Length: 299
Image 1 (tube, rainbow, N blue to C red):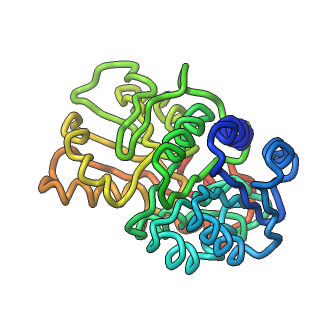
Image 2 (tube, helix red, strand yellow):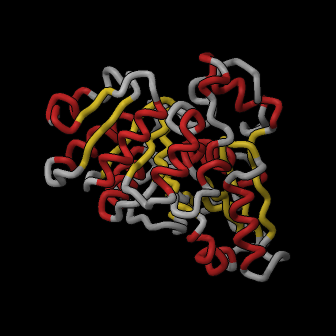
């Protein structure tokens, strides 16, 4: 996903002179294509994420669309006040890029784990969450964000994520993207709905005997405002299971349950979130070990 991000950003920046990239003294071996091609629009702010965000907000107020880039928690929780006050409340075109969402940086420790970031970002009224499920969704999200500049949070996997789409899909906030139909017909229409890099895990879940009657969907763009678009899509199913590498409280599944309740119906479909157990908080291990401990991997 990181490589797809920088490749697409460079392509877009060729025709969009307002695009700028600000990093927090990392991203080496990834960000060089942008830094070398557009040195005047590249800034290394150093290990100072709060300053990085304030700088990005200032540049955005002068017409730039600024992408801030760092690992997981560093461009989000470390500078939450600047994101809220400077970026979101002023509706500035800053995209916070968090690399290695969830438990992707497993062995580096819980300072690098982002399992509460959806909860933070989705409470900001003007913030659009972009959580692509594969490299082609990364490109789709970037194209949408550049075409619709606004406060946004782009959550990427670390590296090596497989492709699940044949082409770059059309995306918009709140839209469910079909990824794989159910392998067999069950007693009712059922869906596995993923956001972010857990799309690969959704495919693993679908391969289990109890889930072969579930179609797999991805929702790469969602926000506070896009809740109102969910009921029409939910009403097509009898059962929906959401999947995310985030804690249940305040996460994507909770967001969808809120959208369902706001639509005035709470009995159909049955929405069951599959999210990380808090036991992973403060625990160090590989991503696979932590996902298994947290209950995200099929038995």
